[in-house]
Image (cartoon, rainbow, N blue to C red):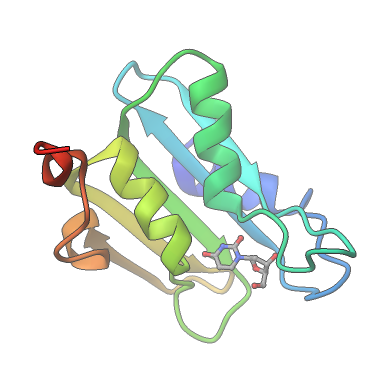
Length: 130
Ligand code: THU
């Protein structure tokens, strides 16, 4: 199963009663495992947890911490772009050159790098004097 197929499949499980906007994400870790996530909303915090964050949590829970590639899909007019918080989370676990492919359910896709998504990312090296 490709990452796009995995992201498409997990998107069906999204719990998005407030936004009604279902998102699926699938990543391959450097260890080779595929991990998936969907968005999960709740009444107190309707933005809930993003699909990308879910896939990252699944990767970490499985014992891996580096993303080799990630795909995100939603039913949007243009390829769905990760929110600001997810960009930072992806950058925590991926090298700057890692590919992020953003897709729509009707077949549009755009691939960018982590550096494209979050230029000038804050990283741990900036705290070296702390
Ligand atoms: N969402 C994601 O899961 N990933 C994105 O990249 C964009 C937004 C979710 C969060 C919320 O459940 C819904 O989409 C609307 O913001």
